[in-house]
Image (cartoon, rainbow, N blue to C red; front, side):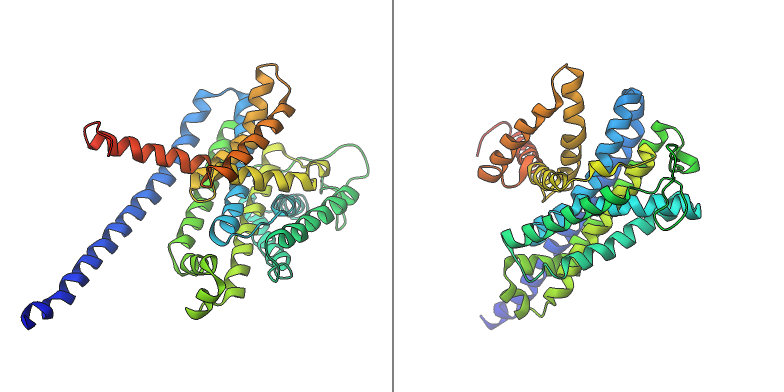
Amino acid sequence: MSKNLSHEPVVVSAELHRALLADRRAGQMAFVRMVAVVLLMGTLMPWLCNAYWIKTLTSALALAIAASGVAVLYGQLGLVSLCQYALLGVGGWIALRLSHGLHLPFEVCVLAAGMLSCAVGMLAGLPALRMKGLYLALVTLMMAGGFQVLVSATGFPDGGDGLLGRVSGSERLLMARPALAQSDSAYFAYVCAWLALMLALIQLHRRTKAGRSWALIRRGEAVALGAGVNILLYQTWAFGLAGMCAGVAGALLAGSVGQLDGRAFVGSESVMLFALSVVGGVYHWTGALIAGLLLRALPSLLVDFNVNGYLSMIFFGMALLHALITAQTGVAGQIQGAWKAAFTRTKNGGRRD
């Protein structure tokens, strides 16, 4: 009897070790599939779409990067931030100013936009971290409104001198694209590469100490404190990562169209970005991609069928109600669940368990 008991811990430890190895391999395969799908999309779509749709999808993928930042805050921590579209504008402003004023390489402008937007996101998150739920949403929405007023008064840099970089005449300079992505098709593939990079960065966070700490905080702050998690540090970290995603998205969007318009960065756009991120799904990387497509591709698709693009707002409202009531994992979660069910049914020979 004692002999059997002495071997039990070894058996349990071996089973746990095999389970951990299997989980690690599954995570690595999912990581590889994610990067491969995004890069494959960047290779194939220019062959399948016309010039109009390439520009539309480029904007959609840039917004998908910003939506992935929303997913970090809401999906990992349950935090509702309604200033992410404003941070996208911050990133675009920084990238335009550096490009026009210092003529830095495009990649340096994008990285600088991401890092400085990360800092702004941390600063925006600090006073809001004492608040939860509706109060946090209202504070961040007020921040988005403040950016709207500021950028409407000053405008985005367009090649002029001085701190704001504004020209006095009507001629506005366009932001220079990278040398390897001058055409719209090449720039679409370039944005896909940045999307893959940012999604990979987020996935690495989710599978390391930061992701484990976020999961404990989401379960309950008392649980996180009991496990020794620095709540303020990791919440600020999440705001910074979301700000970086928004800043990179803003820089890529500025490079796509060459210039940004302050009238496009109203507070309601931050609300729409959050809502469609929830509709797309905040627990899987495809949710951010779906959110970007809903924001840009769906209105364009309606216009192609001679339907008023503003009717998409009605669809968005219905989709949000559906997501909040019956599909908390969003469209991405439903697709993933249907895929798993179909795979299980095929594996069982068509039988339903």
